[in-house]
Length: 124
Image 1 (cartoon, one colour):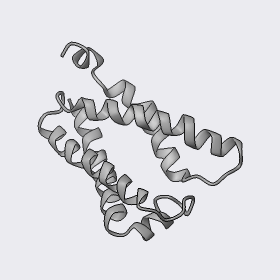
Image 2 (cartoon, rainbow, N blue to C red; image 1 turned 90 degrees about the vertical axis):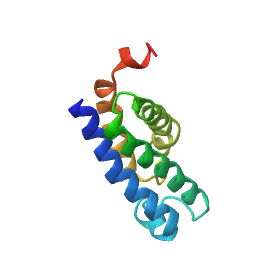
Image 3 (cartoon, one colour; image 1 turned 120 degrees about the vertical axis):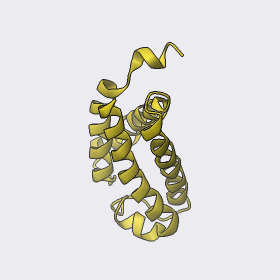
């Protein structure tokens, strides 16, 4: 239970920060979070909204750690998809991509499978 709450707390800190910056200061997010690897568009704010939802669900995860594990599964799926279909092709083609975000995603891809209670998720 402590491991789940620690992950939710990390999500609150990281997703909360990314959400606020992306939603309210998208040009700053373009430079910092996205490492100037993408052109400015409203997709930055859309990303902020997604991470805002993860932030809110992670706050709930502090009180309901087992029940909110679906947000962790969602993160595992979309982060793995992004690494495979966006970051990896960019790396192989020597194109710009947000390196900090990619590193964070890879860490989460390694950590989350060991934190998620798979038995609980699939016996709902």
